[in-house]
Structures are given as C-alpha cells and as structure tokens.
Amino acid sequence: MGTRFRLFVQPPFEDPTSSPEIITVSSPPGSVGPGPSDDRMYVVEPVDKTRPYGVNHGPLGTPLISLPPWTRAILDQAVPDEEGNFDHYQPSTPGFEAAHAFGCVRFTLDVWERYIGQPLTWHFRDHYDRLEISILPDWDNAQYGYGFLELGSQFLKDGRALPFSLDFDIIAHEVGHAFVYSVLGIPNPGAEFPEYLGFQEAFSDCVSLIAAMHFPSVIENVLTETRGNLYIANQLSRFSEFSPHRQIREANNKLTMADFADGWTDEHALSQPLTGAIFDILVDVFHESLVARGLISPEAEDLADLAEIDPAAEQPVQEVFDRDFARNPEGFVDALLDARDIVGTLLAETLWALAPDFLDYGDVARTMLAVDDSMTGGELSSIIFRDFDRRGIFRYRAGPRLTKSGRKSHVHEGRIVRPRDQARLPDMSYFEKYWMSRSGADL
Image 1 (cartoon, helix red, strand yellow):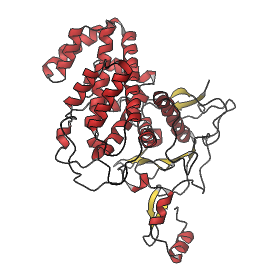
Image 2 (tube, one colour):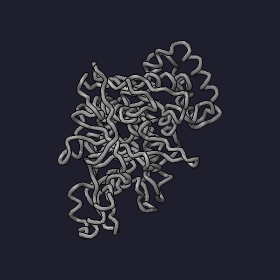
Image 3 (cartoon, one colour):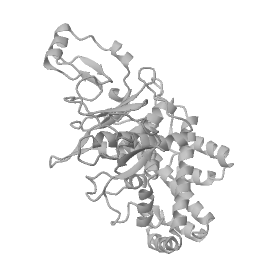
Image 4 (cartoon, helix red, strand yellow):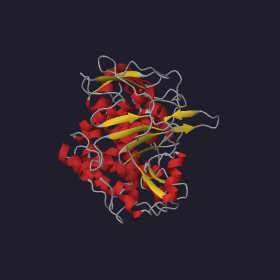
C-alpha cells in the first residue's frame, strides 16, 4: 500500500515520445495532502518569486539571508484524489510539476533510506521540521540547501525553458546532497579538502543512478541497448544522447586523478574519477554475478576487461554479450539488480563511516575496502582496489582550485547558509527596508 504518482524517468523535453510511469511510493494512503505535502516535506509554486534562497541583496546592495518558508502568494496546490493519490495529474496540466517533484523526492528517499538503514534526518532539523520543495521556473539552476530544494529551468538559445521539476535525474541528484549533508556533514572551517566537494557530486550522481535503476523500464532499456555490456553506453551512436540512462553515460568516463593533480576548476569535473571508479565497481560486480550464475564464461569476463583498454576487443566482446544475453535475459536482469543493491549498500555504509574533515578520495577507497571486509569478508576487495587504483586515487590528490567557486558550487553561501549567519551581515538601513517593502521585493 502506498501513494501513486506519475513520474518521467526521462524528461519529455529530452524525448518527446516519453510518457510518465505510474509508480507507488511508500507514503501510506491518505498521508499526503495538498501541495503535495506530508510531515517531512511540502511543495510550493511561488508567485512573483524572482530570486532563489540564500544570500541576496537589498536595493542598495546590503546582503540579506533569505530562507524558507515562503509565506506569500502561491499557485493553486496539487490535491490528492478521493483515494489519496496524485496520478490523476497529467503532463502540461496545472499541478503536475508539483506532484512530479514531490514524487521524485519521495521515490529517491524510499530507495536510499533502505540502503542507509533509517529515515533521513534533515541536516536543518534545528530550524525546520520539513523540507520546502520550491518550483522557481525563471531561475537557471537547482539547489538543495538549508531547509529547501529549489528547482529552476534550463534555458535554451531558442528561448525554451526546460523545467528541472520534470527531470528525475536532477531532483534525485539534489536529494543525494541531502544524504551527504545529513549523514556525512560539512567540514569545519579550514578542514575542507577539494575532494570533499568532488565527493558531494560523485555520491549525488550515484544516488541518482541507483535510484533510476529501481525503475524496471530503465533496467530493461539498459540491457536492451547494451545486452549487458555496460561499457558501450557512451560509445554506441545508437545509444541515444537523450536516454533514460544519462547518469550511466556520465559515470562511464575515462578521467583519472592525474588529470587534476595540477589543479581543477569545477567540482563536477573533479568528481568524475570517483564516479567512474564506482561505476567500474558496479560493472565488475555485475560481471562477477553473471559468471557466478553461469550466464557468461570467465573468458568472456576477461575479454570485457580487455575491451576497457583495447578498442580492438570491443566488437568481439559485444558479440559474446549479444549471444549470452539472448539465452537468458531474465538472468541478466537479476544479476544487474544484485549488483545495483551491492553497490548501493557499499556506498551507504561507506558514507556512514567517513568523516568530512580533510576528506579525500583515498579515504573513500580505504573505507569502502573496510566496509567490504566487514560485509563479505573481503570478497570484492580485489575489484574495489583495482578500480580505485586505475583512477589514480591512491597515487594522486587534487591540486589547487584554479578559479573562484561559482554559484553552483556546494560551498556557495546560498547552499550552506544558515539562519544564524544573518548576524555576521551588516544591518540594512531603515530607508532600504522601506524601499524594499514599497517595491514588493521577494526577499
């Protein structure tokens, strides 16, 4: 029993043929009210809100912290049907984006709370009981911060706005930051290594990837496209650029820490060696499971490993996977689901065991090895060590940041600011406050 929503696995603006799938989240029937809203979060669509939460500025430039709740006008709320569900909302109708955003957050929480082993406790619990999910269509970003998850839009040169509220990938990624902030925490001043920022992005990408793999359609589409040879995900021209496996494409990268030893400019790029290592582990665990089930031979697994470094082996290994997958597609599905859950559990237990101060990728690798030793007696240690080592994670550290942090960084004040931080900001003059109130500023 639960509550139904319609969710796009891939947003409609990436594939016009896509349609939302009816999914059931864990919220008991009748527990989700208008908004949607429940005892842990609520959705609002503000009217005339032009600036995101965080540090904004008054008419004369004085900084001012803006945080939830939004107390001014909002659009009509999405409401449940007589059974308490929200799947009656159809795309392009009022209320659908709000219902879709709530459903994506709840679905991702359902997946990762099972791996984490308990309900997520918001890192802003000292000030807010609930997360505000705010849809801000005229803003070109998405962010999770102190008490809020804001969803803007991507703006194209032709003038179109692509709403992030319809993008499961982006919403699940932002929920990933919630898990990092709540379970791992934020480094103390002076104790933040660059890899902490990269870990934020890598873990959040993995949250999105693993959550998406809980849609049966994603598993089916991935295996239909690749026949289980996941390393071809960003090599095949027929593997659509606008596919429901975007995170798989991004995770399958070739970057190593040697690429960042002399410096870095963006934590999203810096995250790629760590994301790639975890994706490699997922694929290798999947291959091991296929061998253990007798679905591919040990020689086929060795050939797949060779194809990672030798392009000449790519076609032969694909022929092997095409043949073996055709014999038992259901067995491949079971093996991939097992690999998904093994890696999800490894990541969750690693997150619990890490500390934010002076965190680097070597800490992540060594901790995951220790977690595997505790969970399996070290059955996966050779895979974990090899895949982290191939990414140079034991041999290189990130160099200095070569540019200032941008507004999309997770050290940006808009993302980490707290109510008490207002005390360190200058007071706004009476005239500026008056000017704000007369102008209807949305701070």
